[in-house]
Length: 130
Image (tube, rainbow, N blue to C red):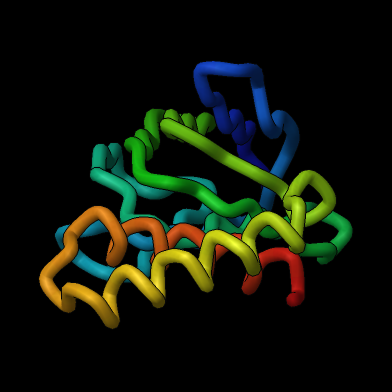
């Protein structure tokens, strides 16, 4: 049994297809998995990855920079500020962003913007396998 998944960001539909399971991280409850028949759900996504387990057993991992997830019937909709699949991530740019954020945090450990930038860069590197 499968359901339809659609991951949408302002730029485009980042992912659309069938899935047996979706694993995401919400700010309220941590990691959550959705399978067909899941009760209706709406949650706020953390800066983390979304894993789509396809019917063939393969896993697609997408970096998601906040947003919302909704489960309704046979459809899971993910609305994200920014979403990037592994192949779309510029590893060099992510490494550079990580270094800049780390330096900013050394200068000011309370720099919220730098902490958020570091989180996004680390996510990109993890999803890209770097």
